[in-house]
Length: 266
Image (cartoon, rainbow, N blue to C red):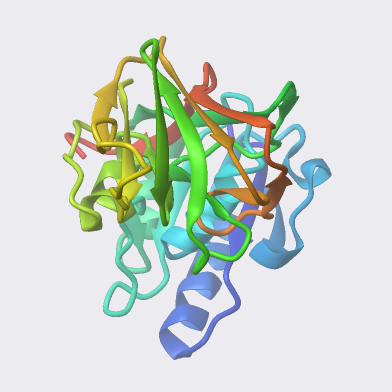
């Protein structure tokens, strides 16, 4: 792989381990004479990601997810766990101990690309700028308020009250969706899943039939609030995209998966 221009996205180091990992990444890139730019995950912009051959995310899964929100082409992303003792690192395939060895493999083309499918969302006809690698969450603007809405999918429409709706990718089925009781999907799957959080089934609300299911890539899910305002948020860390009652929020599979550097069977 030709690596002429690389972007390193990092989380601000919180301890010696994280500082050491970031320094090893920079030292390795200098050693192999790689032209690179470095950017704090809190200060990202579209311009930083233009004309890059490789993007390296150094931190934890939050850093990886935030990085993914700026990648809309086929540029591969390489995740480096800055502190495996403290960070889950689900998306990370390296750490400071093996970074240089695996980076050499990338230069020699001895790696594979794993395509992780993502979701896209619309508020009416306006597209939400982020693609969700884990999930979209739809709820009331104040999450502790009950969301009252109509949920539509597969030609069925149901009036519901709940704490909100999680709509998850295959990758996200190992995150919040899993904690909520959803089913884990193979990482390569292009199906997605929804889960209604804490549905309230009373005298005037639905019988809670459309609560959790797996959808095919060509299907979509639609949420329309009956009263009050709501928010859509990608991966629990994007901007909160606000919508009003009567506006339809549609979530479906994106045609732009994220290309992730992988090694062996990982």
